[in-house]
Length: 488
Image 1: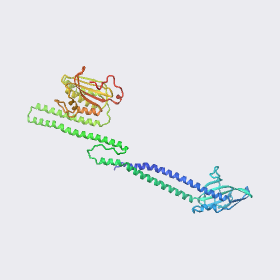
Image 2: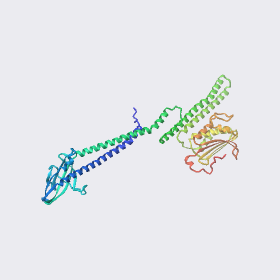
Image 3: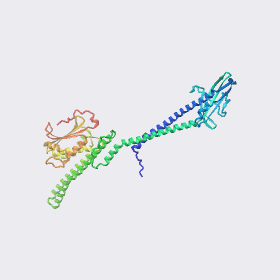
Image 4: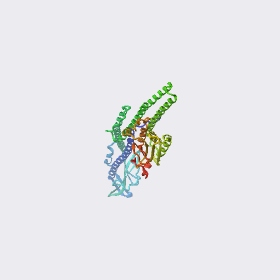
């Protein structure tokens, strides 16, 4: 059972990424707006309560002074008219002395026991508070009103209490209105996000359809015209990937084609030689010697074809570790020393410590092919010079000069191509092609030049290879003994 979580779509990601924060903000905004609206409504209704209390206090009369004051209250209809219009809330009042003695109104309304604020919101000695009356929550305005007349002077407390039905209904209406508008806002945002995502991802879907309907061997670059800039890196990376795939497939097809073509001839020759040996056309020693030569040529060709394939494989791998070029040259020269001794060649090897950024196998294969080719084209008792040293700039220079006949410009141009060989020489013609592929993979440069004799160096053909130095070494200036790239 596959338990891997299904990845979210871009549309869902954007919806969640936008709507969740917006929803949280809307919730906070709704609570804030509701509280502010409720405070505003409370302030407005408190003002009405104060107006009713003032209306009642204006109709008070007193006889007697201070503690002996006796109050008379007449409650006009106008004091209660504002609360009768809505038919939702009830209004009760109570007029009493500071000691709580009832003058008029509802006796069961709890007496005021609070204090007048030091800085009241209105120009009156009034205190607003919440209380209970007959099991219902009420909002009370307690007005401390001085009363004076020709017959007396005293202080009365006028309490006006209102039930909260109207306030609660108004709060519910404000909350429902706020939620409705905020919900509509969320719906609009969701629709806009969906529309924008659909429109923004249309180029992606178009690219996907183009790739799905492409032929298997179609590696032409994807067009970037008319696409958003955000998709340009994706298109560029896709084109680079298709370019690498095209190159790999071309190399694979070329490898299969060349291998089948080049191995067919030695295998056919080998088959003919075996049949000839079975018929007894040649002496056994001669037949075996010819068969051995054919097998050696076929083996060398197969190894060279595999070397070309491995170069392409290493080209696609990560950056190689640093390798000592001078050490690789000495090791390969030691391996091929028997070939040098067989032709009695005067071999001169000069190396300086040089580290390049390359696979060690590639360096060994590069120098092995170059040195083997130079030994093959050097006459018996001739001279062969190999030199490794830093070059001027950020490169290392490998020079291989063999004494022999010069090459024509046409030969120099063709020798780096696969299956090209100089006239009269035996071989598959892959050695220099392998060298060219290796140098190209290492971002280097290789060339063949005809050189004249100079000092102790013989006239002949020289192969020059420039390779980038290791990154740490490239930052350092070249030593005093560095070789100039133009040195013959």
